[in-house]
Structures are given as structure tokens and as C-alpha cells.
Length: 128
Image (tube, rainbow, N blue to C red):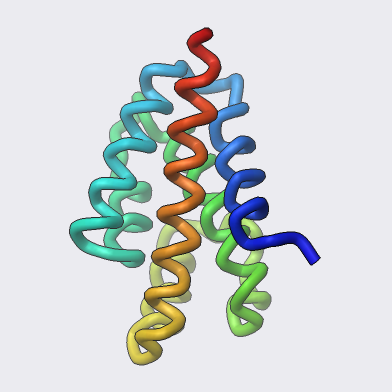
């Protein structure tokens, strides 16, 4: 069984590897998403990623998709949703899932935080 840390590192690597997005945009988006997550939480980070400007939309959609796919692996009640649900469906699913279960919310926050930190490191390592 793969460790949670390695699973998050793998998703972080996939976020960083997206070649269709400018590295500076990707780096800024990941750093901003991490800040939103730490200050406001799981729902807020997905809302942030859904609200990005046209310049950041491609990167935001990719990050959003990877993060949702990751948390789907750990929460069976999210399995009914496609890997990249539209913005409205995504936000409804997250509200339904995390409105009452604080343990699941904190676990999802930890998964997302680890993944974004790994994405940050992977993006930074591409500079060398």
C-alpha cells in the first residue's frame, strides 16, 4: 500500500509537470492556493481555484482536477463524481461532503496541503 505522503508527492509532481502552463503562473497559483487553504480551508481553496482569471484558468483547472482526484481516492462518497466535475457540481459535492464531518475536512486539508507543498517543491526544482 502506497503511503499518503508518497501519494501526495505524486499528485504534486503531476501538478508541476503540466507543460501547457507557464511556470511562473503555476508557481504563483500553487503558492496562492496554499495560502488560501491554510487561512480559509478546503472549500475556500476550491472556490479560489474556480474563480481564477482567464490567464490562470488552465492552471487552476489542472490543479483543481488533481486535488479533487486525490481526495476522491480517500472518500468513497465522492466516487459518483467525474474526475473533473464542472465548477457548480464540484462546489456542491464539497459542501455536501464537508459540511458536517470535521475529521474528514481536516484529513482532506492535510492531503491538499501536502500535495501543494510538493507541487511547490517540484516546480522550484525545475529551475535548476
